Image 1 (tube, rainbow, N blue to C red):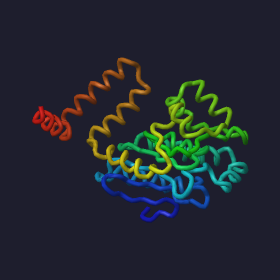
Image 2: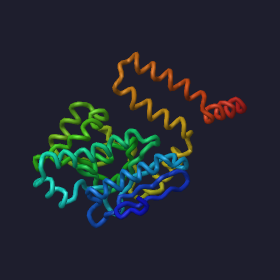
Image 3: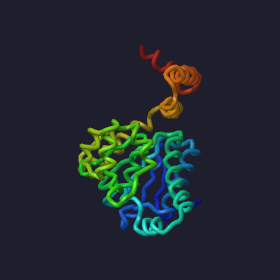
Image 4: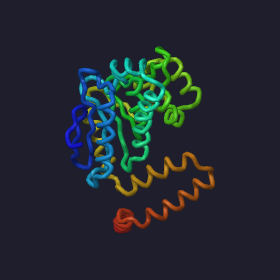
Length: 255
């Protein structure tokens, strides 16, 4: 796919900027947008110039979840059709987890339902002070099912249960306290603060970032001894990278 219709994609200074571009629909998710997002992630994963992926939404909101047409289709679809549709979103979350670069979601406005899932699935989530987060699916008898695998690893069990079963919309500060969000910036300074944060992350060693992300998620399913063993292997591998050798050389010169 060369051209995108529902996202914007660009690469500059090591940052792949992926912008959900349906501001008139509050960047609501549909099949085409999800497919384009997956394509953009695949493209950025293969681009050696990319060090960080920045995920944002055009207009006032980050993403309001599934659009109305998608919800109507869900209500009339067969079991197999719904299974295939749900799997597409699940695959997106998995591809974000397996992506070799850090993915940062920068949330302004509302991140609700699938949109909140998208923000939660990012490796790092930063938010404007006025941003809002929530999983209101339960209010229409629906379940935010795929994101639970990620949310359960980010929040305490009781926090996750309350958030998912209440359907409550929470502020950026509350999301920060819960552990959904890493940083909160003022609305006035948001764009500049995000650019500064991203530039700093993009300045880190690409090989160290990739190895750190891979190991962190790999050990999630391992027993303690196996996790330590995986750490030993990654530690040894990191020592062989050009970034590490150059970094050690520069550090010794300063000492």
